[in-house]
Structure formats: structure tokens, C-alpha cells
Length: 222
Image (cartoon, rainbow, N blue to C red; front, side):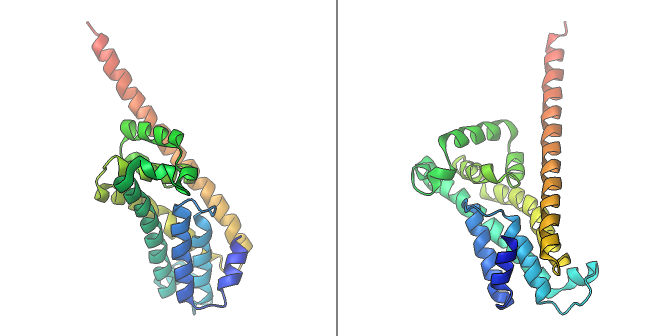
């Protein structure tokens, strides 16, 4: 999938590549069956193809104009797509879950699950959901429906996007001369990121459980 996307865009201008990455990220936010890392890694490869750099170094990559713009485009596409889902939940509420294509990705079961998590865990759910594609759309929809202030949603979502978007673009740029290697590295780092998210969730749940247990023990003391 990554190779086909790059092959289709590599002979076009980098500006068209920016537009394609931006549009695909918005579509992915709406549930289009495309992993978010694919357009971001493809964007990194396209930026490398358009770069005058012959040998990629960390400093050269970070100072490359095409790379910088692609990261900004990636962040913008992510935040715009997520914000549309948030405002859909805030403006029309549960009614949107009955309309195609939302009813396929925002089921009543998912809404109930996310509402329960949101009540128990607060805004941290927004951050974690960014790395869980199956729950991201219903989470952000429910956050909007719950009237969480938009700036709070954007802050937590943006914090998570600041981790994922630059990472995938970096991988694409760094391994730009070997797309298969870029895809393998993306899959590996995706597993690392997901593992990190799981660890964070386990730590937070464990801390919450210990806090509740401590309160129960205090209440039982004579």
C-alpha cells in the first residue's frame, strides 16, 4: 500500500503530495480503511525525494524545508479530521450515529464503552485513543457530545499527534531510498508505540486501583 501510494505521487509536485497526505489523514480520521502511518510515512518519502540532501543526517533532515512542511501538514490533517468528528458529536449528538457512514464506525456499543471510560478516566482517554484506530472516532465523537471544552480536547489530541506525526514522517524521510525498509520500520515502531500506550494505561489503572484501595483501608480503620 505504501509503495503504491509513493509510486502514484512521486512524479508529481511536492505540493500535490502535501494535499494528498492532508486529505488522506482527514479520510482516515473518518474511518477510511487506511492506517494513519501510511500517508505520513509516504509523506516523509516524498519529502526525501524532493530534497537536495544526498546523504541523510539527523540535522539535515530536521532543517530540510520539505520535511518541516510535511510534518506540519501531517499534524494539521490529523487535528482537522479529529476536530470534525468532535464537532459532529457536539452539534448533532447521538443522531449522527444513525446516519451513514457514521453508523458503521460509531455504534451504540462503542459509544457506551467510551462514555464509561470518559467518566472514569477523564481527558487521558483522548490521548490514548489517538493510538487506537478502532476507538478513536467514537471517542472523539463522544467527547464532543459530552461537551468537553474544545481547547482541552485539542490540547490532549495535539499532544498525542506531536508524538505520532513527526515519528512517521521521520521514518519515511530517513529510509526514503528503501520504501520496503521504511514500511518495516513503521510496523516495528508502531508496535513500540502501542506497547508504550498499553504500559501507560496499565500504570494509570494500577495507580487508580491503589488509590481506591488505600481509601477503602483508611475507611475500615477503627
